[in-house]
Image (cartoon, rainbow, N blue to C red; front, side, top):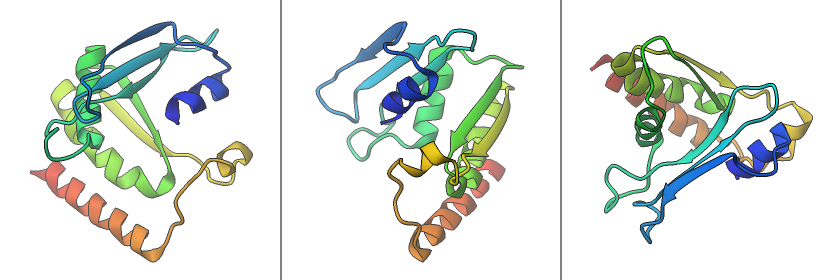
Length: 148
C-alpha cells in the first residue's frame, strides 16, 4: 500500500533501486525500494523483518532499526517520519529511542492532515474510543521505553 502511495504521490513508475530477501515467510523477509523523483531527494519504501520472527511481525522499532542500518544513518542526518495524527506520539518516541539516541540524528514526526482530499480516499480504520485508548497506551509505553 505504501509503495503504491509513493508511486502515485511522487509520480514515479518504478523504483530506481530494489533489494530484499524473500525468506518464504513474511516475518523473516525484507524488501527495499528506492524511488528518485526528479528534483527531490530519494524516497525509500522499506518492509523490515521482525526481530522476533517466530513470535510476531515487525513492529515500528524493528522497522526503524532495520532502516537505520540499511541506509547507514549517521550523526547529523535528518529523519522525517510521516504517519496518521493518532500515531504521532507513539512513533515519535520510538524514533527518538531507536534513531536519535543511538545514531545522533535529528527526528521530526508529523501527522498527515486527514482533511486533505487525497488522504481521504485512503483506507483508515474507524477511530473508535478503543483505538484512541490503544494509541494512548502505546504512547505511554513508548515514552517509558524512551526514558528507560
